[in-house]
Image (cartoon, rainbow, N blue to C red; front, side, top):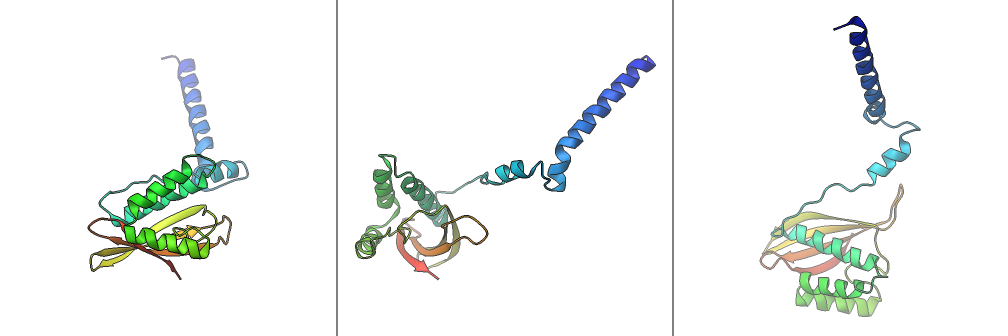
Length: 170
């Protein structure tokens, strides 16, 4: 191989390596003024989700996710019917009656214990016994450094996996 060709190949390889490092170094080192907007946009991407239909906690999470999506999209003509169908599918008959009684008395959504819609939700398993599992639903109502948060204790039947009770938690 000629010296000139070899020098050109080494130069091209060096340029390619430098460009690659220039592109990834800010991401590895943290943020800079140039990458802050890009990093913020990437941080907003939710982590991958997974579930198990046998898990009562996953079913509570599935319910709250789908329910919040439905009422968030209240402009969609199917949203109200979907929210009603979700309640019917995921809640026991007794829980549906309790939710309806709360709504009649408080004039607020009996699933969220509020009149508005949260921007985020999270469900954690908190224990089980006597044929029931308990989950803690955390609803986040705003963004920012100090978002408003409320919590709901949700009880599910281990055999049917239906939600049997909901109560505001401290």
